[in-house]
Image 1 (cartoon, rainbow, N blue to C red):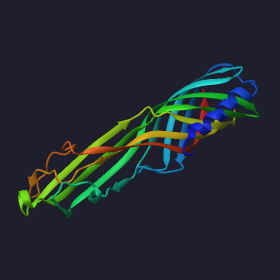
Image 2 (cartoon, rainbow, N blue to C red):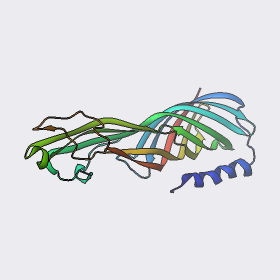
Image 3 (tube, rainbow, N blue to C red):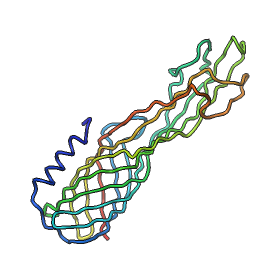
Image 4 (cartoon, rainbow, N blue to C red):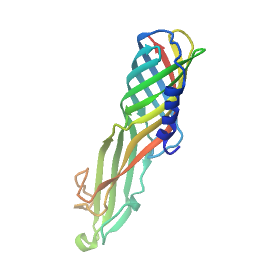
Length: 249
């Protein structure tokens, strides 16, 4: 499932071109509210498997199906974790002090979403649906850290405090295709199950140890301390199973 787009696109095309046009319950404009949760089939970048979200959808039903646009919000939490600061790059000639070092981080993914959806009424209260989501992909990494070291050629045996901290974000439109089924449980309620390929770009702050400027326990200014620090970036698409409750106004 490395490329969910290639999986979903043929299925959606088959639906659009090969299925007969089913009669809809009602034609015209409707308004629906959705509350959903999801579970990722993989977990990367120290994010949890789960997602939660909600949205308000405006739809228009025709004889060939229902077209809809949804504005919503999506949140994917992350757990606090300890980053391996000792594996980061460092300047030549410094001696790391593990007893003075530590790097704590936490990630999350969230943001406003827009979904464009097309639905077919299959009869017997069943619906097939598909579309694309954009947004909901503001990746955030919170960093609070310090690397202690000695630089004998400059400070002798004095301990240097090399602190760095910040809340770093990366936002993407991140198109995320989805396809799924719905089942009406009444005139105004339904349940849905979707397969969503959740896309985002993850960032990871990399600090180059050995750039501290204060000896004997002081701290330098937190944040992006020097031009040697940088971010590693990774583009993701993680398949998620979504379950949603739908209320039609």
